[in-house]
Length: 107
Image (cartoon, rainbow, N blue to C red; front, side, top):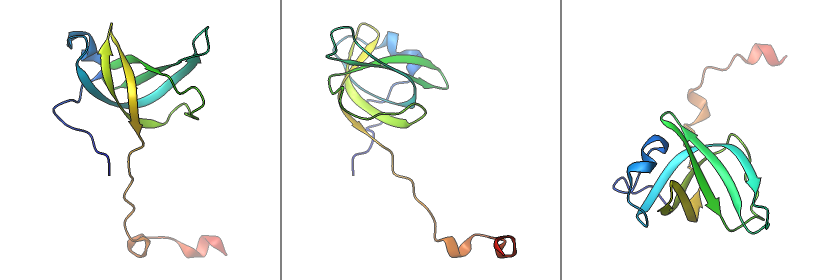
């Protein structure tokens, strides 16, 4: 399972303070997706509670959607992250037998 390396995690609001060419990881929600004019790159706005950061990806065929929460891994360059990998976080769902479900509403 791919997980975030806490030593490399940065917040969107602090990306400017990270030196260029540093390996970084950012967990955030996709707020906007656009394709570069030469159609080689996807430009993604990723937000977290501290701000918004630009993320650049070569794979324009990947189907990312707005409002998805994603872990982006890559190198920082000029206040953006050039992504070489991304991961969708796992969501652990506890055994549903422990949930209080009002079954009378389904009848």
